[in-house]
Image 1 (cartoon, rainbow, N blue to C red):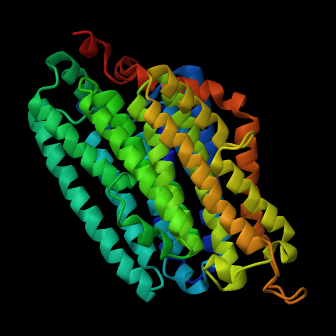
Image 2 (cartoon, rainbow, N blue to C red; image 1 turned 90 degrees about the vertical axis):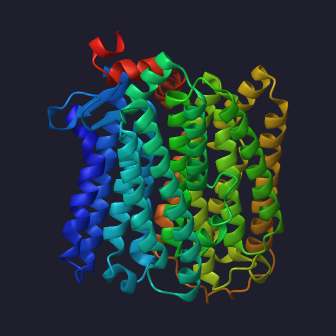
Length: 496
């Protein structure tokens, strides 16, 4: 059973290598890549069930017992994110088959998407902080190629910022790892947590923890987000949807794992995260309100989501963690949904500015109401997927008396609704710019993925109680790091 932990990393990597040899057989590339991701989704669904049924799963590579060997660890938090990321990637790949273009497909689009999701899944599952760095780099190297794939001028311009920021962040990550290892003598995350608990968190460790905060904030787009708007709006729709759904979530996961497991003895980082989350939400709201380009509005909504999820970490209670986990699952699905909708609007009209689009709902009524669903979900309107997470984080904020976080978090919901409603009213209603009968046909492989994401959004909201046991288990482990430590380390080690 434990061996399945490695498949969300190994299967995409093996398939990515295989597809290199079938560069010109586009149909085979499409079928094999979608089949691989569907298989990974099924395996990760079984893993989610197994963690709750049997406890935290651990796989020690080459038989080396921790803390000496490399290992993968699957608790409910990691397993839920692997499942959601793999499912959404499968759906986006289906959308890409019709929209990405043969030129990009022949230039190894599917290979690099699979390598990127391998890095994402590996980041969620690794139990070793150095291998977190390695998986980050696998993900980032693939994303460097994807952001420039096609070689358009705007892509190349924005990729310079994207690469430079991430190279600097990676260098800081290595520096922090070096100091952490020199201090702790281990890179196993559970072992680090145990030693920090035993020895206390002195000034050097506090400094290291703040460097990690800077690194993961850069990766997540928390406060230091200047690279994100251009980088996420330059690539084609399928790539932008992958970036919006997945890349910031790896940084968010690293922040949660680091500050609920490794550095739990100093409250200063939590206060800083709260301040950074508030500033990010406010900046995202201002950007969404001022934007006239549909892609720009969508990107700034990504920033609002990042800030809102990290409010749960700043509050730091088990209820807040439950809300954040619900919300991050919702956000992966809903951001992919939003970007596919926005990209499809551009695909149908050839325009990006909302004032130049109108009347789309007359030509494409189903598509118009699908956009309405994602707008309501992102605003947190019940019974859609964003509602449960917002309520739980709000409840935790009230319990802890953090009313500023509560006000900013729920105020952002109004801004999200207003910014997306502007697109809905301006672009979908009014006099149509496409004469009836002259509209571009909507291919099934374009509308079907959007319908699938809409279904997931509704199911996650209406059926929230069915995943409650998994979310509660994930939040319980985050709030009680000793559970993770005892599941990973041999009994003789953690009892010493």
